[in-house]
Amino acid sequence: MARSSRSMPRSAAARRSALALLLALACPCALAKVEQGTLKIDSVTTEQLIGKFGVAESGDVQLKLTTSRDGWERGRHELHVLFFHDDNYRKWEKAIQAGSLCRDRNKMADIEHKVDLPHELATHHGHGWEYFVDPETGKSYRVSLDTGESEWNSPHNATRMREEGPVNRITHRETVFSTKLEHTYPIRGRNPKGERVLKAAHWYVVVSDCALEFYEAHPPPMHYELTMFNGGSHLPSDLNGMGVLYFFLLLAMVIGAGPAFASAQNQYRRLGRVHALVALLFAAYAAQSMSFFLELWHLSVFARDGKGLQWRYTFLAADFAAEVSQGFSEFIVAALLLFLACGWTTVSFGSVGARLLNSLESGGAEVSQEPTRAAAGNRASSARRAGKDFKEGVVAVVKTALHLDEDNPEVKRRVASVTRALQQPARLVGVASTGAARVSDFAGATISSSTIAGVAKGVDAGGAFLFAFAAATAYLEMASRRFTDDFSAFHDHEHWPGYCLVALRLCLLVLFLVGGRVTIAAAESRDPEAAAFLKKLRQVGGFWLAAFPFLVCTAWCAPAYFRHRYVVGGLALLQTAAILGLAYLCLGSERFLALSTVAPRSASAAGSVAGTRGIASKLAVD
Image (cartoon, rainbow, N blue to C red):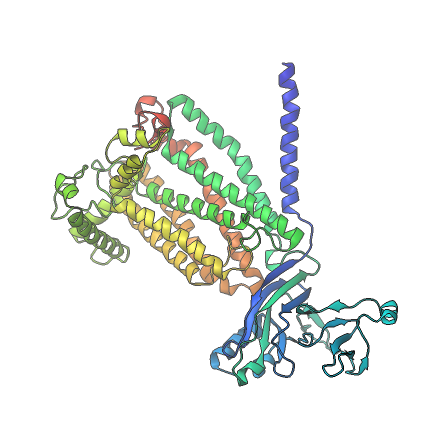
């Protein structure tokens, strides 16, 4: 008892320490956002965008440009730094598309600053002077940057160094520029004094050299370091409050994990196994929680150095890991909703051996649950048939969704085959296609190449479609990183990979609605309670699947400084609600548990397991 009493305060202290850590991550100290990179402009591309930043009211920016001593000769260049707010930046983009002159486009900038690099022949600079060496006499002289006056003086002159201080030797050319960012508009109503108020805006930073339009030139690249403050804050205005949102969502996930784990543990003690639905749900739950934690970690580091944990600054890229975790969790949730809508664990069609798209019948023959010898002996013919069945299955689903020729028996048969296949996810990925022995070997302590090859061989066209869908989603998430600024895991998807992700989600929504309708129609005559449940699931799941495309497609309606929070906050809330809702459904809803095979009342009715040993012997599948 004494040992137990001592362990309780320790666990309580550990919980308090974890809570304090999360609070520290959610409320980081404020510094600045830093953008670093290399810009290259020439006669073809005379302007380049180097950064953007959201400002609530007033912000500050500092830009440091560094380049080599050679090139950028004075008198041959017009190097300028331009600052645009939202509206003028859109006008500037349209002017580029219209083919206007660079100098005309520069006039659209809210702030324009001429960049003066040190002279290419200067040897030292400091205290408002540039030092040169006279080629005829070899003596040093200096030129005032303010007045242009010159005098004989050496950077090493002892009297000058005692009076003014040392100067800097020029090994590379560098200049620093600072300005304040404020976007104002007149006060509405009577305003005789013409007073103006500050307005939130996005600011875009562009470097241009309009002189390059008039002759062929390729000046050396220039390194830039852009430091931006949002009223003294560390983050742009479009990310205000995101840390607090992530903190409370993570807190909700942590609080919900305790009861969920306890319910799953009770199911395991009672039945001796856990359903695959529960295992997949816990994987999505853990991935989403990890994503929130990594994003908070990224925000915390960002507050200290203005860079965060990004690939371009560190190999410990928490923002990339958060993106991967978020995508993994969303894919599992979407797949679970699709399987449940098609009757997984709730509705039985009797003949459930059909495989997704590959197992569609040809000529009305009965579907076989085992691959035939002819198919095994002629892989080329099987691949051609799978491609044909895939195409015909997609056409049947689309026709049913658009109510075109949906009364055709062949269309109904193919849609029903797809729905039956989605009713058994284990068969789609091949783990249940050739018996429990394969799954047992796969889940054992050693995994050989022959085992992996055997499992891969059991994957049919339906499983290949699911794997291809997951691979396409991962690729598009990776590709979208090239179009994002700092928080690449959560962005507004205003680029082609984002629009492709929206299209994939819409395709999944169509399959979800069509499969759900077929399942409900079959269940209404056999199990009215299951049909009623599936109707509600179809409504809620359809709303969740449609929410992502809706948020992305309507983001343009929100102000530019609010779009990121609109999309990111909405997706985070929806994903958290979906996972918590599924956790309650699978572990706490008595109505669902009474209808499904997830946690039957007796172990004898728990269905088959995935294998005979290892993890597979504890994993129930239907």
